[in-house]
Image (cartoon, rainbow over all chains, first blue to last red):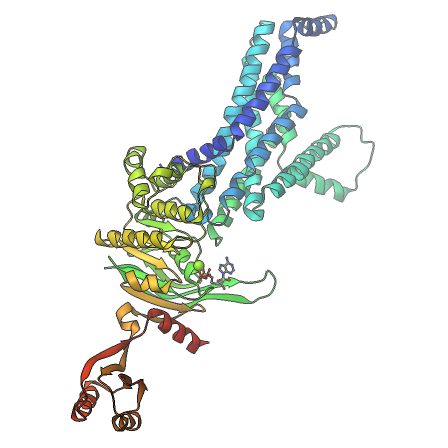
Length: 275
Length: 308
Ligand SMILES: Nc1ncnc2c1ncn2[C@@H]1O[C@H](COP(=O)(O)OP(=O)(O)OP(=O)(O)O)[C@@H](O)[C@H]1O
Ligand SMILES: [Mg+2]
């Protein structure tokens, strides 16, 4: 009950700070751009291109269009903007004079961390549902093909966010600074996740142009195992909406493990810290 | 029943990151606070008052010793339902209105909307802020924030209220109003734990006080006990003549303040009566005999100076 009130409070905070308004304004802008961008000729062009290669009709064209809409770069922009918005939640709570009051209330420290996590994830889920849901409706109406699998992208993107947001919580707790939190996330986790993604693809491919030392390769593979894999998850998302088989669930599992570790460490640290 | 029990409470903070030094914020502090008391914790800056309250509220963790609220260890989250707290330098999210602040923290204390609708304005009115309920708090003055903070501490109708410098920044009339609110709470049977430097105020409302200095408890007792100096009496008389004065000075080790007053250090009431007999036998009229009372402030200053 108190946990619910706490989550509600974080939501209200987002509302009051006009964060939600900014998010929805930004998303509406994207939607409007997409509405203008997708004309009948776009789809027909795609369809014709595919047909000329005898790869089949409308369904493929729509899927191609949709997988472009939720490809790597848009994923990065969406998730990164959400991370920026939510990065101030924990440092704001930790401000002197505020944290004292929160901790004096009948809510456990574990629930405070989980509350922040849940609030952030729900907020982002709702925002993505709004954005991707409307885009899906527009694309479906314009093309006449309803690919329900596209909606999985809402879940996948929320998941990618959740994984990185767990790190935002921990870094926020440790540094008490939202700027540092943003910097670390955008400049460390995303690029590393991307580089490791590329490195792993490279290791798995047959033609190796550059030869890594065995040690370097082992280190990279190890990092690949333990760090969150935003880009691989985006690949999985793509496979879901285009109904292609998923090669390996390892990126999802290891990312979820990373999230569990980040949350556990956050809870452990917060539970023993003096304020 | 004791609402607060503290036994050999010790708190060390690690000072600098890499040096092994410790800041000893509290050292072996023990005392109890009974139900229905207004208890004042005094001490100079950095004495450890806020640290002690934070330990009781589970905001900071103790290093050694024991602390219990309502017979439960301070780590028990549910005990906090019965507790209200006004932190020093509290900061509420400044995009909220006064009413929303009360509602937000009320909900965190476990109140439902129904209760809040009924009580928010009741408490805002008690602290004289009912006209400001719908104003954003970034427009509040310091004293107004303090009043709002007090309303926030009372909102869940707690049995025990911790107030860290509640009158900080409040004008004299406001301070009187706050004192009246506290006395009213006491009447309702609430226990109040007050941290303050304002000794004259503590003296006016506290039943008992404890004095902390550099983390150690140096005195604890009722305000009455602490402020009376048992063996010092003040006599007021008709004009003293020189001979009597000399005898008072030499034989009775008195300090004479002008012609009509002197003070005397005694060992019990017999001594007082001897002096009275002597004065009467010299044909001087006694206007009054009083046990000397120090103000809490002079007591406090003496004690702290002795310790340093
Ligand atoms: N988080 C902390 N880390 C390190 N030292 C701390 C911390 N909090 C308090 N201290 C130290 O503990 C001692 C007691 O501080 P505390 O705030 O309890 O004093 P106080 O009696 O409330 O003082 P004031 O009257 O100024 O409010 C001080 O020396 C302070 O520097
Ligand atoms: Mg203090």
